[in-house]
Image (tube, rainbow, N blue to C red):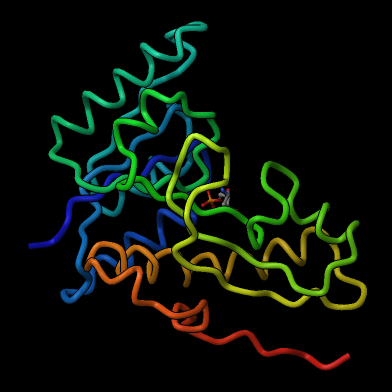
Length: 211
Ligand code: GRF
């Protein structure tokens, strides 16, 4: 039986698209049963609908400052849809302990850095400013600490001489699209802990360009 997954987005939804594409494979251990956005105008909702996936928009603006009520509405939709695993994919609202607690151990997130380096926003600019030579992305379980939960998988992306924020973001995003489906597959099949290192998740291992 495929595990029922909801993907939570706020915008473009390219990671969501990668998850939908991967989940079409008969052997993939999860199905994308629902795509939910806190922004009704998220481009990813249209993409998901065109792919034949059920979508829901639960606009946080309609709840004013009441984060708890917004999250309760999300939680109710997830439960009514028999969701087992939640994947955050560019979901740009901070979660309260309520939703994190309700889905703890069953909620994944993708973050565009090699955690624990560069939690939070503007990760590519910060990696460039710090002068690190290796950057990348991480899929982790969501806990109350922002971008701080147990790491399920990582993909490394070398920083090249003359790299710009945009160029680096594009190369990291390509790896995100390989990493997230692989991490979800391992997690849904119950073998996440058995994956020894990030390279096991890479469709195309990163070429380490000499410089
Ligand atoms: C990705 O870089 C993801 O790592 C971050 O937000 C971005 C979302 O992009 N959390 P998309 O909506 O999946 O295209």
